[in-house]
Length: 471
Image (cartoon, rainbow, N blue to C red; front, side, top):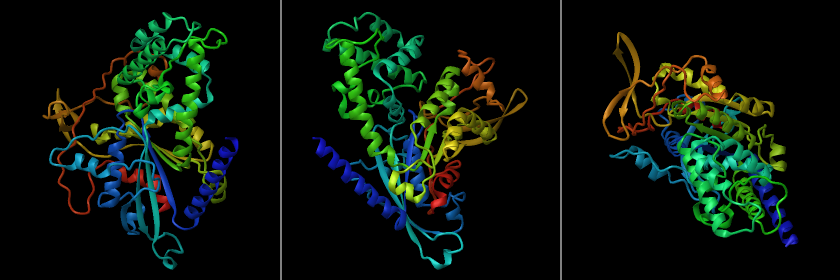
């Protein structure tokens, strides 16, 4: 078994180096990872990005398009035969069809390859013909990304951190009571283990619905074909010294280690470690609406997410020999169309403040980072309404729950982000004197001209930051 494992590792290494040589010298490949936590809009982002890269009439911020250097863009089969294809056509039909609706959210890894025929820029542009550049977009749930932090934790460390963090949350009260009622040093009993795992899973789902983002292990929320397996049948337990053989604590510890080995490490090896550009989508407006605790939890989650990356520059030699590093990371606050454009700079400033620690660490490692507010698909229009003698900047759209048209004013975001971050860090339960509204809008009916992709906000600038330098 050892020899077989070594041989497999050697073959993987040779194949990987061969792929990197081809990518470096012949047809460059950009592997763009797209992630974010629940309801951040990953599926819509990828669908609109691809549609607008195929029909680039609304992409003036993409320099290669502005300079007329992109001759063509076309979809190709993705290179990874064992990874499901991102269902671009179905998602685009959902967004642009006669009855537009939001597509289903990300529940597993998927991939799509978009290839460009583009003329290079610079002094040698006139001496070279068009070249092919491949963009491989890898879509994966943000909950899986947070799992990478588990690789450096023992079961006791994870249990202690988790139980301390959730001790005072109302959504965890039932699970905490369930844990206190059992003898963790007693003999392992499978019905008890399954009941604890169900209780912990119920808590994770409730915590996500309440706006918390530290909901790991991620596969408890998105189990797929692992549902009901022992690798997902564990829960955090109080630490009372070393565990003995055949106890409930020892079995939970064994399953936690199996989760890391059989679920988390393959995801890192097969998908995450091959990414060199990354966009992290964040529903900052949703967190602000839910209150200070959700904002602080989001800030911590952004730090945990960045700790999973290997930021740095991808020199061609290090890329061939040592593997890829994430050299550009974009933190994007989604659903900017829920605000009038006058408030977009404030949303961007809040996004920059939320991700400050994470971006500083990435910059120190040599990666380029950016924060911006975007809307991958614009679902609203803007208008100004008089109220009590004041003109309020509003957005108008179709309400998701009723299908009726409505104008909405969510409240003024603060110019200084610390007015949100300080109460959040101090554990405030509500915003003092402020109420930030949030309305769910359905996608608007579209009538697209030939050559135009779906309407968006700053998707072209996001694309320029992520891939513009390679086109």
